[in-house]
Image (cartoon, rainbow, N blue to C red; front, side):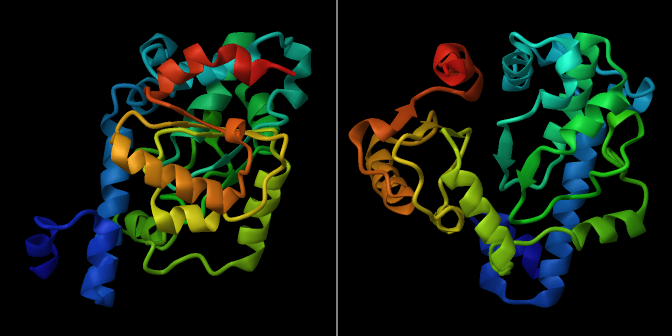
Length: 269
């Protein structure tokens, strides 16, 4: 099959779909993407207990990850009576298809404060999460705080339905309302953090807007070479119209280390 043959030489599945220009190949590729994601959900050493043990997470296993640091950042200085405002001033723009943020954060906060997970989920649903390329499954009506169908791999109909909810960059993002909402989200931000981004040009274009002169932009860049970093910096400054030298800071580290070293910076008023 051409898809399998070409995949051995492809930079990414999106580039492959874009290059082969075949609707059938696009469908097969999308089915492969969502199946791989759902299989990873099912077999994850972090999330497997969601399926096998009545959806109970082992939060100690997340300690080596940035997810743990994010939940600590949210709970710092908070009281359980503040549940309705836990997630204020927090929003996400995700170019990934997975639902790990939705699967983790509500239950992490619920566990920390001993609150009913449904109560935290109700507050979390107010969080803006823009996904320009869609998401591999449902995120509403979560039983026990778990996104619907999380880790489900045994239903061809479910995989087909999930494949219809994602887009490759070949299809682009044509919804002007979504693009306007993303722009508004960035314009209102006081801090913007790029976590583990590859800074693909088509993704940066979706972020094009003029951010506030008071906004500080941080970006992890542990896997980007020094020569490429100068190009990325120029492109990022142009897309977000960052004029001041101190408006953009690259952190040559992984996401978890970033949270640890920039903790006071992220939590400063």
